[in-house]
Image (cartoon, rainbow, N blue to C red; front, side):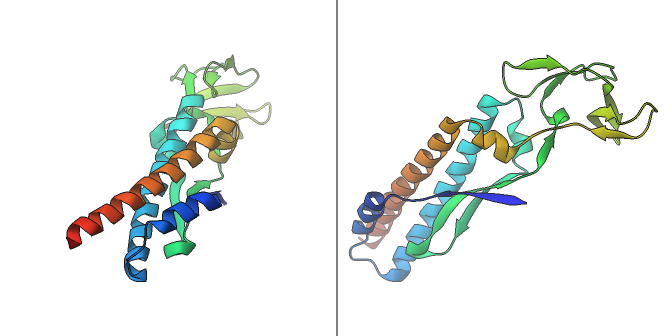
Length: 189
């Protein structure tokens, strides 16, 4: 399942942006807005990944798989945001030790919050990957992989990440619209 984290423009920002388009055709205006929205969505993805990796011990490369840019519509009806796949992340994608087969792994999901897992939990190599597993019965099998929070959960865990991402999307969009207009005006002249 995917969750869409959307940016809603404030009315004064929208009015300020629209005033810049005097003298352009609807087609030119639409192209400039789509180009600016693409850059703003990309900046939002980068900000989302940086915000999550600043608070949690997951790598940005791992988040590349689940955090994508989102654009819907065209022209003045454009929605810009970040699309985050809402799946639990395996504990082995976070900082843990030891990396070899062990009876008691220590995991740090949120930075500065390290703890040793108790009970029948261990680190093992499964199909060429390292996994943190848990026995589900007294016997050796079956086992299951332990999961950490989802990317959506990590994003929503800190309100400052939300605010930072939206500020970057809004500011980048406005900056890129002005850049596109300047480019078109200089190209015409």
